[in-house]
Image (spheres, chains in turn green, cyan, brown, yellow):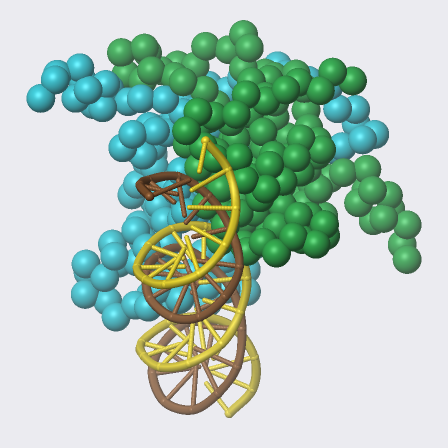
Length: 142
Length: 142
DNA sequence: ATTACTGCAAAGCATTTGCAGACTG
DNA sequence: CAGTCTGCAAATGCTTTGCAGTAAT
């Protein structure tokens, strides 16, 4: 519904490819790899190069408008817009599908590390298991 | 204190290198990368090759005696013995030090994904922040 | 006009794979 | 002895980097 407008980071030129990267990330509900974004942009006929996507993503991460995540069982890093919403993902160990989880177990959690020892800035949680589709497939002995 | 004896997986030959990998993993309290394990074993004068370490680790993961984790901000995967103890890690965003955390926020947590949608098998939590050493360093304006 | 950006090519680095000889059971 | 392992080399795949031309401000 409400399409929150992203503030363009100061000092960054507004090029076609950069706008395209943001646009792709705005349209997806799950994190995408550089290659995903690359092929999505190529669909529109643009002459983009993968290294450019990597450079743009790296820059966006540095500017804080994109988060870089590494998902287990996957060699490729994935990226998402930093919506400043707290989010976690469930990952299917079979098909590697990524499913967003909205509530967070850390909200009321105080880890047993003292403030003196470690100043906690954030966390990263990943739930793994079998998604509905894969569960069904393995039930039917085909 | 109690040095729990690891049951050797059936069907796997007990070679020097494999025993050395287990031994290195038994001696450490934090997850190690393949390269870490490799150089640790080389110290003892063995003529090992990195690809062998990777092959052994992959095998151990498949047999369930080793866990493979990917830690953010690090390109290299790390490995730990599967002690069947529930464990998480805090990672310093500055020096990348890894600190074990013993309690777990997931114990009493029920995520908002139904059993029908996703059968949860486990999870992976990573806390990030600044460790004591790095906090002290940045306080002193040197 | 300046300087940042990108197409493109090539390098870099962790990890994987192929093969033949070595070792375990 | 047979089949599994490993040393070794080379390949693979994601990501980074260098450079010169192009585009944004």
